[in-house]
Amino acid sequence: MSEPGDAPGIPPPFGREHEELRATVRRFVENEIAPHVDQWEDERLFPRELFDRCGELGLLGLKFPEAYGGQGGGYLHDAIWVEELSRRGASGGVAAGLNAHASIAMPPIFKFGDEWQKQRWLVPGIKGEKIGALGITEPGAGSDVASLRTTARKVEGGWVVNGSKTFITNGVRADFLVCAVKTTEQGGHDGISFLVIDTDSPGYEVVSKLEKLGWHASDTGEIAFTDVEVPDEHLLGEENGGFKLIMSNFAWERLLMAIGAVGAMDELIETSVAYAGEREAFGRSIGSFQAIRHKIAEMATTAAAAKTLTYDTLRRFDQGEPVIREVSMTKLMTQRALVEVADQALQIHGGYGYMKEYRVERALRDARLGPIGGGTDEIMKEIIGKTFGL
Ligand SMILES: Cc1cc2nc3c(=O)[nH]c(=O)nc-3n(C[C@H](O)[C@H](O)[C@H](O)COP(=O)(O)OP(=O)(O)OC[C@H]3O[C@@H](n4cnc5c(N)ncnc54)[C@H](O)[C@@H]3O)c2cc1C
Image (tube, rainbow, N blue to C red; front, top):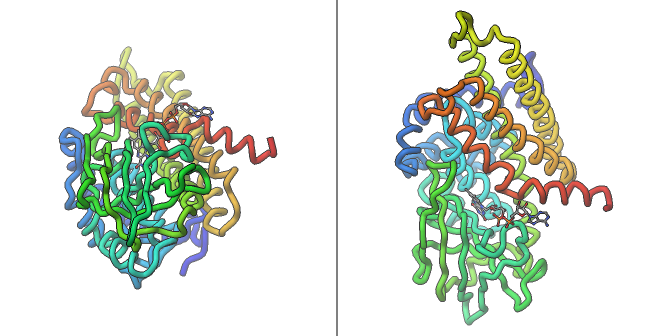
């Protein structure tokens, strides 16, 4: 077992063992994802087989115990996977689809699920045989999660679900939906529960696959429930205790978004430096212009600050410290930083940056979701402000 920063050049909280995983993941992304990403983006979906392949390599279960088919690692292993998935020519859509399953839908089942639930969804999920999605957002409830209206009515032996969800990543092809529902008349903080709904249940309907600015290789679904019968055994965690589950999941989701931004910024800087060295204007390389050098300097400074903040919050989160303020700050800072860095990278690439082949336009489109998804910038500021007792 390696210790954080136990070899020269390895930044804490990572150790030698994590860097070995990084090398493996980097090879996998470069060889088996990057060459196909353009096609998957055009097709608006990456193939289902990628889940199987990631499962086979153990990448979907890095932080889950071996007893369930996982690798027995921890958050730091997952962080390496997510960071590498965000560079080396992967895309926001590919990362979103894989992470929505492995890092957002499965963790609540591991954390709050009973043994039967783990065997039913976590074990096949880790293998990549079943794909999961997390269903919280509704047409009338985004930032204001507590106002969700999808209702689960108690009946003999289970629940009957009616309502709808929108913007659900993996929502078109998921096999199970970890779904927030209202289980009291008034709903709200003390009236939300989670049900794991098999998507082949009668009355479960994928209404549409949404067209979006970025994340093209992932399916984002709109879902409707009409008298969907869900057995009692599908209740995840405590009845009416769903708000706690939502909150516990958000911290990791937000940190993962920050880690993804760190990987994406590194990639954009490398690409921009290489381009600035090759492209000529006025008889010299554009990298020799002070304005371009300064742009690279700004990008690198922003990325370094984002990485330092993210790694420090990750270390503290991994050690079990209460980090609500820090996670919110990290999410807020890194997502804006990535948009800024992607925009500067596009500027350095000039007209070519606007063209598909150079992939900078995709990075900018993909980055724009960061300040919205997983809790908007405005909501992050609210949370941070409230931690000061205001
Ligand atoms: C591509 C994509 C994938 C997604 N994947 C998932 C998924 O897998 N599962 C899932 O459940 N959800 C998912 N989402 C939903 C995402 O989490 C929401 O879009 C997000 O939480 C914001 O909600 P909203 O879009 O309804 O915006 P709204 O809540 O309507 O906000 C609109 C604007 O008002 C601002 N605002 C709202 N409340 C306040 C306030 N109190 N103070 C100040 N400003 C405020 C917001 O910051 C924002 O600028 C996804 C979204 C997208 C676009």
